[in-house]
Amino acid sequence: MSTTPLNDLFRYPIVQAPMAGGASCPELVGAVCAAGGLGFLAAGYKTAGSLYQEVKQARRLTGRPFGVNVFMPQDGPTADPAAVEVYRHQLAGESGWYETPLGETDEGRDDGYESKLAILLEDPVPVVSFTFGCPRPETLAAFARAGTFTIVTVTSAEEARTAEAAGAGALCVQGVEAGGHQGSYRDDPAEEQPGTGLLTLLTQVRETTALPLIAAGGIMRGAQIAAVLAAGAAAAQLGTAFLGCPESGAHPLHKRALTDPLFHRTALTRAFSGRPARGLVNRFMREHGPYAPAAYPELHHLTAPLRKAAATAGDAQGMALWAGQGHRLARELPAGELVALLAAELDIARTGLDLRNAS
Ligand SMILES: Cc1cc2nc3c(=O)[nH]c(=O)nc-3n(C[C@H](O)[C@H](O)[C@H](O)COP(=O)(O)O)c2cc1C
Image (cartoon, rainbow, N blue to C red; front, side, top):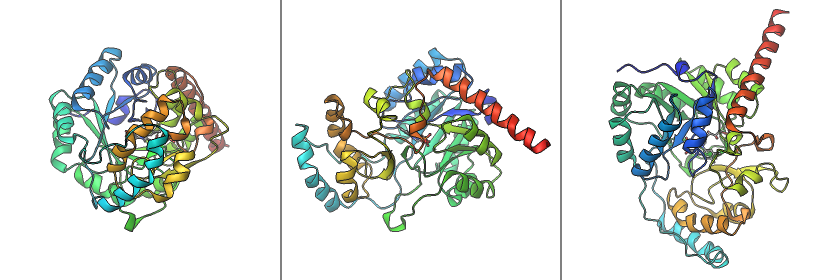
């Protein structure tokens, strides 16, 4: 079966980012796809079985193409058990405060990668994207044979070269502004880099490869989509902009926090998961971020009961409030209306660019 080109997968170059943890549920995907965008389910943290249920539900809700995002197994140094133990002690007070034991850290590092691949190859979906690494060439070739378009998330020109050599169909270029985890191939604190802003990274990657590029990070308005298209992207991927939609499965406190003046800035932190991720700065991040070791997914499992208890208690200060730098620009609209508004803004911005170029 031949793979559909990227541009045939959407009417507007607007991709709703996969958001693990419940936000990018089938209802959100269905609404985005119906409006002409490309919606994504997130396989991260789910069992292969519940992923398959979500795929079936998305198919019931839309006949349009949609994607599934898969976490790559972790590459790079394994966590130092002693550092994880020190962090466990550091969180003892949180455990007492929320009256819940901390989670077990030995729940596996691969997020069920192989069983998710098996399901997605057995019953293919139109698009599969990967984050935290690049699949082997044989895996990408197997998806191409199944008629699935593949996308690999990159955070540097070097990662882009690797993904192109492996046979990716397109790249999702993720700037440091992005909400949630940075999708870098490795999390090696010895090679720690501050991360690159989207427009600079996009330009670097554009000059590295001819593959179609999807730009992600801090995009909240149609004019920003026009800007990344002008810089060589084929589409824009938006996460935070869709978090607050009524169809999004994000926790109501998370949705509200996006525009709450109490949360006025974001930062990258390892506090909740052990891997750098961008979220609204809250008490938990301030108190524990500086001490959190590079230990993903160990810290993700360790803090899971705390995050759950904080959400149950209605305490946004103890939750992982993933959000991109543009969070204050969030608009609480139904997803279909948001896609239509972004497309209209994009049109206006492009017309303005054409007029300026013509004069
Ligand atoms: C709540 C949340 C969860 C996310 N989960 C995933 C995920 O499971 N897989 C993935 O590739 N990216 C994930 N991301 C990152 C997005 O794909 C995208 O890079 C990011 O949302 C773009 O930045 P923006 O939020 O400023 O639009 C997540 C982002 C957020 C906000």
